[in-house]
Image (cartoon, rainbow, N blue to C red):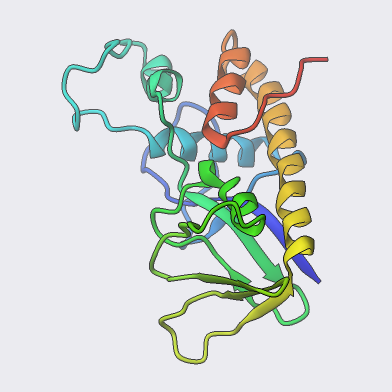
Length: 212
């Protein structure tokens, strides 16, 4: 069986204490979905903000960062026009265990490029590098090579229509994450829940769910 999950790249900064996050671990990915624990939600939010934290890289930010530590950290998420989220779609063949993972510099914000590519509306599908994943479509069949530079790399084969449905369905995971993040923010980021959800929606190219 083929499964598709939206994931963010795990990379931890030392000494983070603005809210509870997971402990540093070896390189891996964190799946985004509606059933995440509060710690995993906090970790995901921290990771997404950190992806866009360029303080000191571009002097004279406009508007300038607040002095209060929490708002200072969240500032790039709330003010950056084009947000970047290190990650992408993780595609796994549960029968063989083979998995196509996002390469370095792959952007989860561009997940809809999969749909354009599988609908043959685009010839471009940037999945990053190191590893160097490869996607080939021929006659309604998709061949996914996790690392085209690795001799003997496993190959995942599936149908183009079936994979398209799975990628489109991953939007439910992203929407569920936004809903859970909004609830999480009410406890850990009081007064900022709506703004956080809107910013995460931009970061993940998903319309935030309406508050119930």
